[in-house]
Length: 111
Image (cartoon, rainbow, N blue to C red):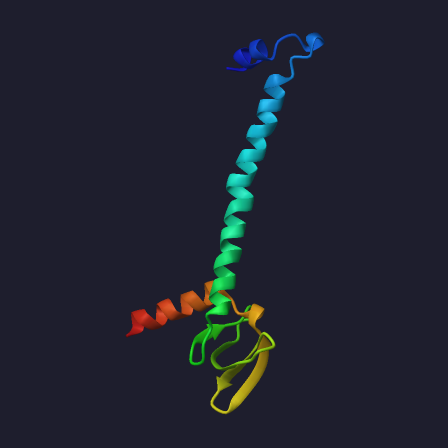
């Protein structure tokens, strides 16, 4: 296999860098497929999740605080009820989509 690549690359003195350019393009494509694209997809899902939060949703913050959304404020913050009568104000971006999904999945299994 390596011999085939050496043959296709040609003589290094004659400037046979076509295969090298092809490999570089292939590496960039693989990098995009396996690294950049999945991260962009997950970021889009996180943004959609945060934008769709409503009063009464059970959530978990990235710090591990469990609570129920009491109020969605206009300044990208939430009022989160962590105990009956105890409220904290947090940023929307501090809600963990993964942990919240896991919390809701466990709650459905218990029902």
